[in-house]
Length: 154
Image 1 (spheres, rainbow, N blue to C red):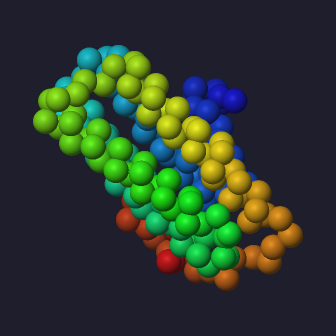
Image 2: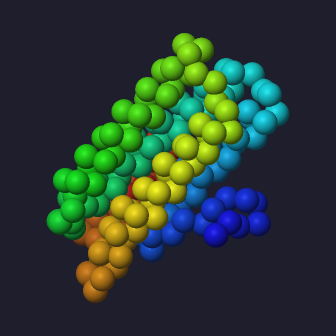
């Protein structure tokens, strides 16, 4: 489901993860807008790097939460994260070398990649985490993160 600003509402039932997913969706929407407007490659490259960095930070947060709560599917989930990071880094590198243009098709694939992961893998984690579990042991240990928002202090 998309919100009024056109960004798909992706909820896994864990507020900090939902905020991250929303920010990632917003960055992907910015990439779409830049390509449609024909803006400079340097701006698109910067947004791709931002998305890659933020995705890496987000995955570390998720995996820290999974380890702290002994999530049984953590190993498989982490392997999927690793594969997605490698694919995203390769996309950034190819784009930066001018070996890749971001068309509607490739941007749609990026959006699908993000959405599919959230709606399948992350939702499974969110459902498991919210299934009659005590609060995370790290609850209350929020700190300012590298992107200026509160993060779990992992």
